[in-house]
Amino acid sequence: MPLKQPMNTGIKDGKLVIDMAEADELWNGLSKDQQYEAMCLMFQPLLESATLMKRALEAIRELNMMQPDENGHRWANSDLIEQEIVAALPASS
Image (cartoon, rainbow, N blue to C red; front, side):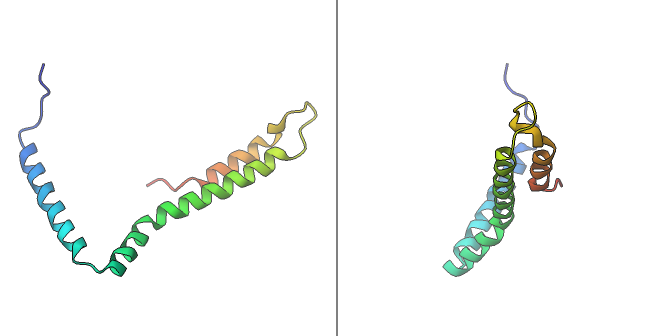
């Protein structure tokens, strides 16, 4: 059975192609320094999230290496570990 697609897909696809061509033209019109600056701006949120997650994982490792509880469990600090993870997660939109 063939997939059903909305009738207006061609119009949306055509607009997307035009938008991509315009974006490509704008991008190619930028100097290398401007392209670098734009890339830094685009990827800054990702870098910040990755940095926060790295710090959280380091803190979790330290918490896990602390003295085990009375039963010998290393995850005695699970509440603190969860707090570290939640704090490092990006804010939901």
